[in-house]
Image (cartoon, rainbow, N blue to C red; front, side, top):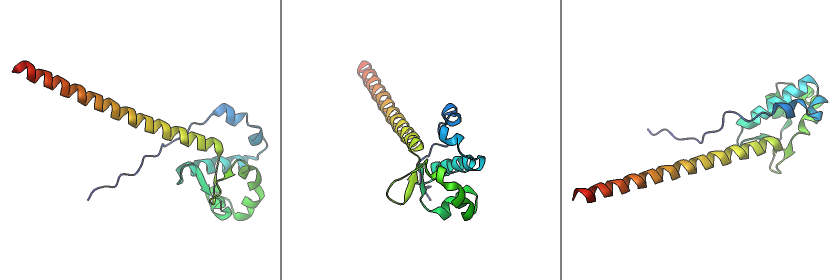
Length: 136
């Protein structure tokens, strides 16, 4: 049985500490709201499509580890950090840019690896042909 290859997801995203600590909107959040916001960012990174969440209050409360009543009380400043994609999902713009950056880096790396491999194969074939000509 052949194991199905799944696309590799980056295990982490860049976290700009200065921006996080200097954010005026985060400074206005309670400790619980900051914790929930960070948890939702992490869950969104693991979700499919990457960096999105379902725009469903019950699901968001479950991921946040709070009751629906608590979620209703704390959600306003957290959801203000997300935008709707128009298809029932929400995303954080900054994290979405990070996901796009990771995807582009991965694609460029694969393209570069393939190019380097093709160049090496062409060089090897050229040297082999030269050796054959010298031997005859």
